[in-house]
Length: 405
Ligand SMILES: [Zn+2]
Image 1 (cartoon, rainbow, N blue to C red):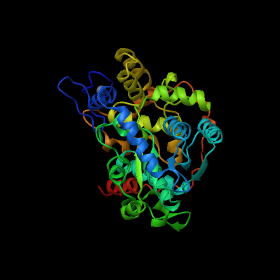
Image 2 (image 1 turned 180 degrees about the vertical axis):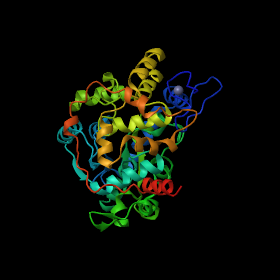
Image 3 (image 1 turned 60 degrees about the vertical axis):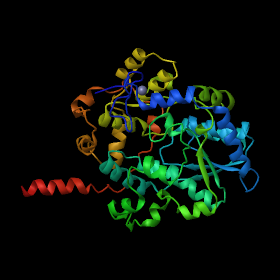
Image 4 (image 1 turned 135 degrees about the horizontal axis):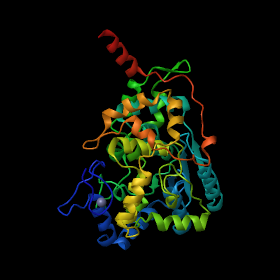
């Protein structure tokens, strides 16, 4: 595998390209962010956008909020620095961890904001997880789509046309560069978010009933993007804050820890010094492990690469951390398998078609050799409510075929 000569990302990383010096496109984007972008001009652009909307509706803006470091910083910045009155919208994917819940409540109370929570049907979520794992080797379709589409519906219903998100995608991938004005719109939704499956397609793929009633388009509406004409008619503007201020995760985490008493947490597969990274979701360890199986790198390569780009870590130290933490089989995998009614061998079979060459997937046996010596502190509190077995149509099809032969 070819690795970036500066950071720790390999060629299997989505959208990554390398220049003649062997430096990856994300490293180059971040270099531009640090050296070539006129951030004071960007800041003025943000102010012009804000003033266009301030005071004209019940809320000045809408802030989609997970409770992680980026959305918490965004909310703090807009309320405290820009003096805006936001409507906070929280799409609860069902896997939020206790520390994040406590952090969020403290943040809402300290800042004084109105909040709308939405939790989609758990049984529908289970089916969506299985189907997107099978189709794309990524079980998070329900979360990716819901987080980006549901707040847009709320923006329409509550007539709050300015939506402000957190980090720009140019910080982590090369779908957009820092030179483009990234709109968090339907184009981006189809490009980055929905894995090339829209809700209509998904409906056709799902098995047909949950708890005895048929799944229909209504059940998947939270995962659809609102019609472009309606968004245009309302004058909706939806942009990431990180296009207008230079995004610096480490510095921003210091701010929210100091100002909001935001607390970090341990995350499976992540070194303890990165206690601020992806602390929201019970299934994060499984998600990162899945990435390792498919692409040969995990969360530690990602966080160390960010520090290397910011000259806070040398490459050799980062490489040691990656060797120690990436690819360790998370304890949460047992929970995940139980939750979807899969055994580990079937799980590996489902992942296999999605492996990105030249990476080769390790065997189930190899993976099981590397397990953590303890679980994270809240492991026993994680939800274990399953339900009807998810119909593994692919497996029964394969068995039928094998039986015929
Ligand atoms: Zn790089």
